[in-house]
Image (cartoon, rainbow, N blue to C red):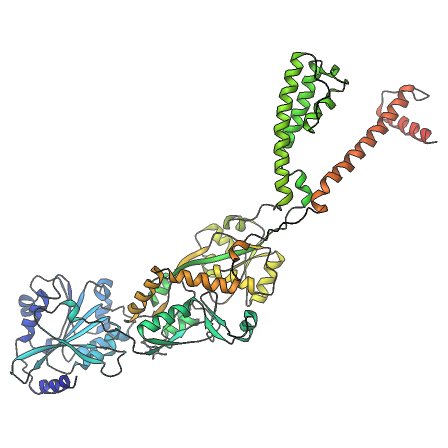
Length: 631
Ligand SMILES: *[C@@H]1O[C@H](CO)[C@@H](O)[C@H](O)[C@H]1NC(C)=O
């Protein structure tokens, strides 16, 4: 390295301004490593060669965008397409002159999306390679500088390649090779971020984001306490990922417990709030909390590759199970019950018409009821026709009673629930309102302006509250559905002080999104972290860690608990209430029938009670008879 610095000093002394070297080097570049790639060439007229001459000789037949360094960087930027400013297949070539610094400073300060993937500086004056450290170039992923040097040994001109390693402690600007016609693109643009060399990243975080990032403490297992005291160590998926990446890429990190403004992060009146605000202003380097992709964010930040997918979940209080005694009639629905009664009546009528009432004791309907109650028939009818109809009826009754009995077993042992809300559409149309904690998420806003009518309906029914202590009681009261990011709410509810065993979550998730980290815009080193993240995702480690953290928080077997606990228990009176009720009812009916029979009997005897055609008279008579009877 010292050698390079010495050489550099020599080169400044012997600068041949009219040397034709750049032309030949440019020719070699265009036919060599940059072959087939369109160029954006930044030209400075002060260099002393004419543009047309350059194009004719060096860039013959190469697709090319020319930028004149004499104009304002801002002005130039506004007139370019997105492709010219940042497409990865373009190579940007700067012929450094005295105007360059001003132009590029201007490009970097304005809100310009200029971010070349490949930027090659060509130092035509043999000056210092420190131009690489220019603030404007810090956003470029592949950055190199070609510099001509006077090699002392044989006085012939040589071209050196330099690059800038921002994380390097010793020599940020370093010689990476010597230019020759066989230099490849990889040799020209070396990896500038092979390691972060122990760098400490500042992460904008809110350590209350189950299961991604949360506080734990080694001593107490009581997570509620840890939550309240806000002490302990950060844990969760992101800590695992960061530790793993930090180990391989050699970096450390610091986190913050929560943003000072208690906001998650969104664009409000043109300014970013919360964690994203910290990153946007450059105070912090990136976020690792629950953030999905959206257009606004990806414009203002550099997004990482996705690591997980999740949306927002709705938790609803389950309606209580139906009264157990009603299990007696659940086995059939109302229509089937109706059909049974109708069929029985039909059979009785048919039986009577066939003269069946004479068979047995003359009470045809009682005789026909026997198959339904699993009773054997005392005698078979004598006529063949009647035998056939009784056989058919027996078969039908057998099927009906078997179906009823089998279903009754099931309904006695498993609690039956009234229909629940299963979809967002049903929720939107129900009388339930929705509640959510207001910490500056985009969801309330998005619901209100949604193109989907059901989402909009949810938006108008949404009650925002500051704290979970205000939202959760509403859920438990059954007046509101609780809206929160899916796995967070699952864990939060289990850890809360409320009894949430009777709640369930809708399967559907709102705004499911791929989650990502957000870096400050134009972070050229982000691809290093991204590549690591992708590997962890592809190896299944991210999924594994999420599962593991959820298990730790909820206890193993939490999945099987979903949908209520099922325990074997003896049948209670509640289950068996129905037979007693039926017994009571039938007894009442039979007493009534007895009464009617007595009255009819007395009326027939005609002992002073003359029958009359009018109903009112009859009723009066009835009363009269009853009182006399009692006396
Ligand atoms: C990270 O953020 C700090 C501010 O806290 C900033 O000074 C530093 O330049 C950032 N690091 C990188 C690599 O961007």
